[in-house]
Image (cartoon, rainbow, N blue to C red; front, side):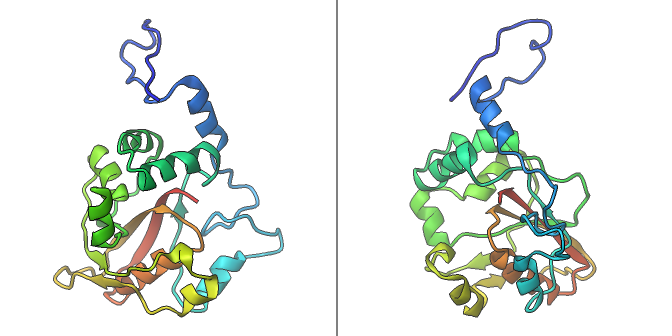
Length: 215
């Protein structure tokens, strides 16, 4: 996985990539193109749609996020490496993800990671989102928690929509009028981040954006 470039005048001061040229190219191929994608969540949509079907469904229950920032499709090498990172506990891949994903330059009052259940973090010995942020030296606030034992991926879309909000929130922080960036590893239907954001909106935040490693 790790690769050393030939040393020359152009690479002497350049930080070495964690991947070889072939793997870097495969990551490049997985970059999201915004053409014909929903302006809110980046899902592919019909040209006649204002909102994609996922956002339209979410809008019936939630206030939608302002914008999703995401640079990669959850497919190919990106999917393989994220799965290896999360499920095979290959923590070295956190360095690769930290190299590849770049947070938006907008200044947020609070950057808040979407939590995993504590028991799951203990099983794998790390939190996959927080570890990447730690490597990037990003300041974040763990204001949310969840104790759910049910994986969203194990439920149908209808079941996920019917579930009560799985998140709880730290109550001592004043969030009124604040701009928030929520961070998660994967964006699928958007239900997870909008459940989390509902607790923030109840606290009168001004707006929230979402950043994920892939979608």
